[in-house]
Image 1 (cartoon, rainbow, N blue to C red):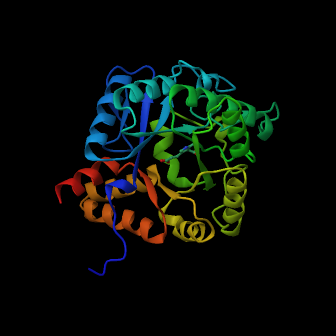
Image 2: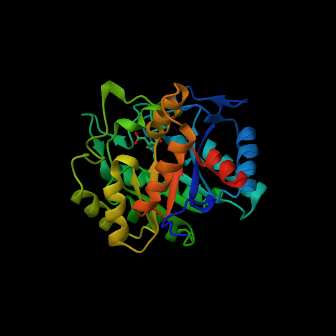
Image 3: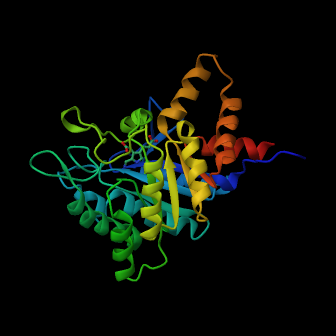
Length: 309
Ligand code: PBG
């Protein structure tokens, strides 16, 4: 009666991986229970999530070929674009289709942008590439583009591109406060990404010692036209989720990332914690901090558990 926070199926966004080469789904070792999907197995999975009441999915692509500029990300017949078309034709408006918008899964060097000869990521050259990807995703049926590369000006560049081609209804969920985090480890296995030359993303993602900087990033993205803002990762950044909630009235999302999921699974597999209880406690805490929605690899499990309650 006096519970202040509740976790419901409406809060969940399921991140899903789709491969251009697989014909059968393949489990990701460091993300137990999470698959790299074939186009066919993705359709079955999203259909199942829809029947459980999960309102949204976000797609990540594993292309057959990578190059220096991530060309496959904007190919109209690229892996995510094909998946969007399939899912739209299967489900109509019964599922919100989001597409992660970045090039790291598509570049040979694994960076989220275009790399200059001296090894730096060129922010403004990358914006042009992001604009093309946004158009390809919108043409293929995305409801929401979710730029995750943390380039300055990315929301504005994408908004302009979408509006110029009559995609004014496609929304933008900005990965607004995204930290350079050790918790992304299993994700890089999931999408087969290794950053070249032992590199990292500290030049464009945030320093975990900074909170006020996150407010700057969120404020910029809102002024550029973000329809919703995301904080990522979630559990180690609940202060940022609460701060985001306090400064805006647009929906706030939090991404409970791969490493956060893997820690629960690993400890539960050893019998060291009760995995189900930890899952509910963590996800409810993220809501209590102020998130309206949570991107989580637990989406399927939570939705199933809630349906049985
Ligand atoms: C970048 C991207 C990453 C994640 C989502 N989008 C990886 C990174 O920034 O290195 C991580 C998600 C997770 O760990 O679950 N396109």
